[in-house]
Amino acid sequence: MKKLDDLPKKAIFEVPEGYFDRLPGVIQSRIAIKNPVPIAIRRPSYFVLSFRYALPAFILMAASIFVYQNYYGAKSSDAESILATVSSQDLVNYLDDDDVSIEEILDEAIINEIEVDELNTMELDFSEEDLLKLSDEFENDQL
Picture 1 (cartoon, rainbow, N blue to C red):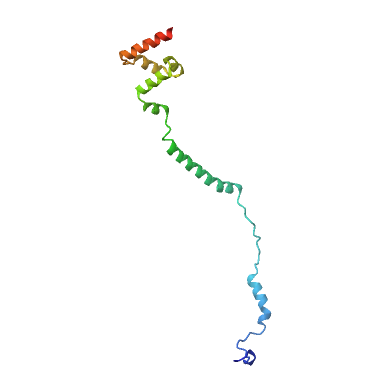
Picture 2: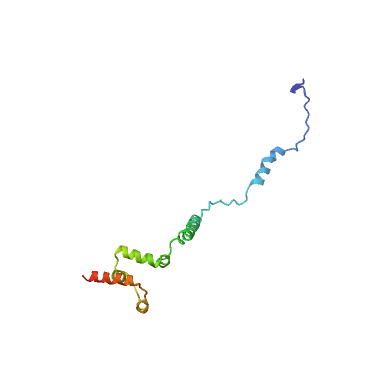
């Protein structure tokens, strides 16, 4: 096996004269910036930061309100629609069981003049039993 010292030494490549003397200047001229501009760190303004963080929160809040209204809004409706689902007989039975008088109901009710006129002209169909019961209650209240 041959040793490294045994190999012949010949110059395969030729270097131009003064190449390594000029090399640092050539490299410096290529990388040198003629008018260096300081690089300033640009920080976003408070408006941009607040918008960046407030927008997702606003979208999340709007979506939750939308979902809440669609899910729970359908379940909770106004009192008139809830009362419309209750039969008249159930209402009469409830009022009878709770001993609520008509005067107490009328004291709490807010009725405008048109509704009063409608109530006065309304024909009520009471059975004889209902009339007897009402007259008995009226007499008991008078005592």
